Length: 284
Image (cartoon, rainbow, N blue to C red; front, top):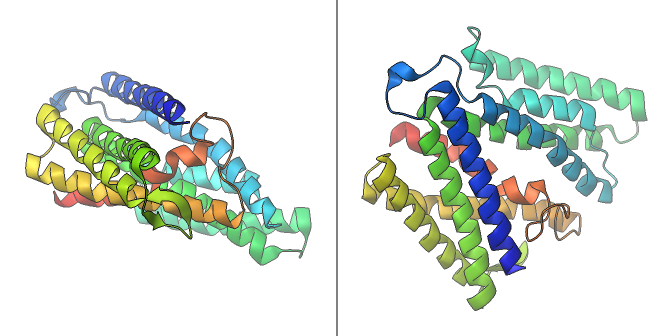
């Protein structure tokens, strides 16, 4: 399991970094020369996020079905995609972020109610619509900040965020598997240990400092804070998804990726970390 985690974790991170760098090469943001930047940024990343919304929604739907809650996947997936891409469309037209999100939120709710009525009538309205709305917001609104970091702050801060968070995941799993003794959160995720958290912090700080030195994103002391901060935030994201799996009595959201499980198991920590990263870069 550990070797699969290390292998596929490295491969997926490499693929993501390669795609983001290619994206930056296409739109001119790979360099610090602002004159090379095209008006529309992050197109490939936007496409990737949209593609991930579909299997992620299906996995969340299967978890909910264990509790006999039906996520209305057609409407919730469309809603999640519209929320996730909320930072992309203003590059084309003059669009207020607040108005856009408010309108999507309203029409998502109305669409879910209509879909619920057409498929199940009055049976399970609150549970089905509530879970569907939650799934769209959890996956769509949180992932929108990944695109926000990319568009507003550039590809290198985004790569720093993803690499720090995923290296923390791998560090936590590796050190926890080998040396873990003291449980970190036994009620939610019995496999997590304080030793693993130490591994997460060490890996995250190391990667953050490497990015700070090589890409000149921030000072080294701020990079240490960044690594420490997002080691914990990333693990909180993992615990958030673990709560859902625990409720559904499932170990993983799916079995698509050896060593990880499903799409939800891969994106859980970056999802929660992305809004905090946006704030961090805003005030750094």
